[in-house]
Image (cartoon, rainbow over all chains, first blue to last red; front, side, top):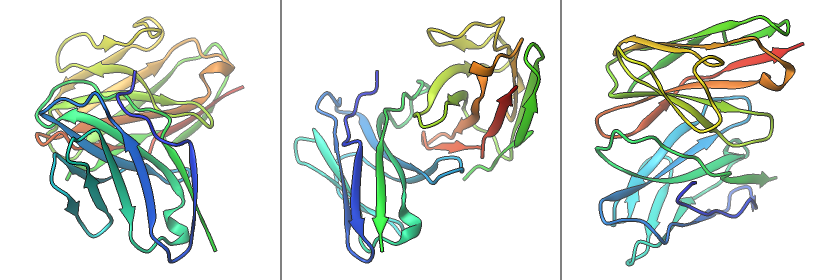
Amino acid sequence: DAKTTQPPSMDCAEGRAANLPCNHSTISGNEYVYWYRQIHSQGPQYIIHGLKNNETNEMASLIITEDRKSSTLILPHATLRDTAVYYCIVQLKTSYDKVIFGPGTSLSVIP
Amino acid sequence: SAVISQKPSRDICQRGTSLTIQCQVDSQVTMMFWYRQQPGQSLTLIATANQGSEATYESGFVIDKFPISRPNLTFSTLTVSNMSPEDSSIYLCTGTDSGNTIYFGEGSWLTVV
């Protein structure tokens, strides 16, 4: 089973920030939080990952709570091209273990 | 980052036939996996492709139906055997680098008629 839970769907107005939550209450101390997204008809792509500090890159920001039981992916200025399914997963950074995907959050950016 | 190429990208197959999907990575990855994504669903792990040895299958998937090879670090194949319409899916090859970031191929869209 996936180690994370996410809302099945969300809407966001174009140009506004999209905040996608993820619950990972059973995360262990050496597991990282990774986010991927899948735009329709394409293979999934990596967005960002983090351990306990907040992270930012050119695509998004990742906010992880102090207890690490949940996190939020932030797309600061959502565009129509950000409409996709977003997957939050937890995994060891140097693991050779398999990765199980949950159903993810289907984000619709609305004009 | 790694680039993963899959072929065929799309195919329509007759039931009862078999199709082999090839996956090539442009740089070395530590792990390779095969996933299936049925219409409107999330990704389901089929198996871990182990270099030079038999793949490790998840519950519900068997070697006779989905034989997998990985002769070296950068190449793997998945065969979907004796296909039925229920096998119509996207099949995705993934590679994981030393930092455990997962790279995905664009998928092979399979329709069984």
